[in-house]
Length: 244
Image (cartoon, rainbow, N blue to C red; front, top):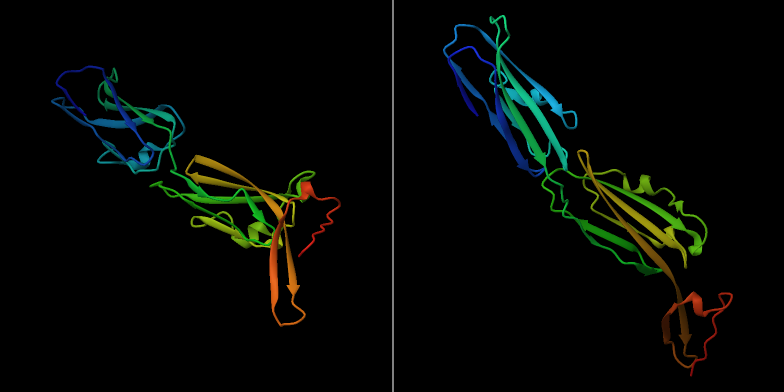
């Protein structure tokens, strides 16, 4: 942004607008030349948007601004005013430049690989991937509903086991020690990058599982049959089968 001034005046330059993604950097350079004999000073003022210390990113007598990628919050608009003052002028005339930065909604690019049901003897494994170019923190929570009835309760020792929150915990694996047949699990993942968040919720049904061993009395052979039990078709959890 370049401005030339050769006489005393107060000028406001039309707004310079940047439409960016959260992972885009912003660079602004303001050059003001004049023939006036007075000393000058500069200042930045934020006029709207989430509070942001733009001077932390200023250099060259505050005329250059360089905001790194991932520093601003998505889906927000920031407005600033740059004032170039003539200090010896009693009327305090100045040149002002308006800066507007529009940050679009951010997409973490989250992909999830998770079952919606497991057998009670299986591990629950959930894995994720993100395409975000910004640093991401993962926060997992686990709640369990006993046999699908009543309220959900926090899974015991879950945070201690996984070390929540984490910048690298992209997947979790729960062993059958965490649940029983007919339980319902509520697994929540919250991604955070700066002030931006995205939440994923997965409900997992734990189905009953029964192993039956058949032994041949005339040999040393033993056969194992794995059966998936649907509790809705059983009475009082008693299962009877005829084999031939």
